[in-house]
Length: 357
Image 1 (tube, rainbow, N blue to C red):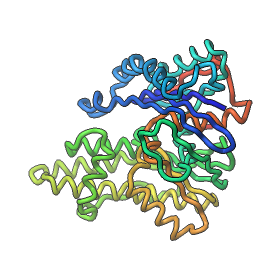
Image 2: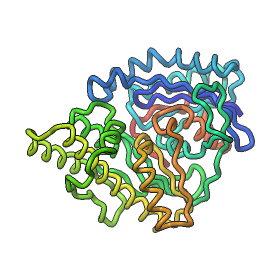
Image 3: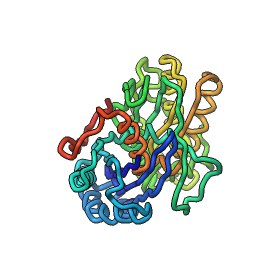
């Protein structure tokens, strides 16, 4: 089965062509055109600019994906596309391209929830040694995590705890009521004048900072539900920087980055482990852009080993933490195995607020 996947939910234009067989995935091509440099000067993604760049980049990215895969378009069996959630102007570009290809090639079309892609990015593991990024063809195995599964998805737009009793069945048991964790990272980085995107730079600064210097309340960590809130933490950082305006030097920024990161990770780890215990998860997964944070990976793994030694723990390859079409192809594969989840070009629509169901 060969799947063409397209992802344009935010500021990456991405396409991947993947051949699936016998629980293995051969990645024939995976192309990502990032817009980070363009949005960096604005301190965040500008939706109208993102959509214009998607319009400019989609066809070249698709052409490059087919050229690298060395197959003809009619050899594709299915087309999978992110149809939400995300920025509606950006989503519409990818969905329109996918619908046009589905119509022209007479191939079935599969709409994929962006968050679903982040969940299924955990299924992909290299066969043998980790392959060079320069390699044209990448071979992977598809894991079979034991259900029930709890997945923490953490990104710039979403922070959710998702419970799965079987493939493609999701129950959101907790989510942010305001800012997502990744959004808070970006905003705090902006407050400290560290640049964009905030996640990587906060993590880098935190490595040589004192995480105990600033004492922040762990928002909602003791609440009985599994929801999150990071808006108040961001505001606490703002008030602290205003109070210490004359003292803000490099050491201050490193200590603030470390203290802020420590607070966020404590909340994420505590709620995830507590939810995993209550719901009897046999596997805990991590996904989304913030899942690239090494401290989060390490701390969540350590606490799970201590408190849930019989539970498995997986996190995605670093290259699958940011938005990409490869993760969309994996989710598309499991949809294709369930014929009821396959549609045609007429039925798929972009939805900025698409729910994971």
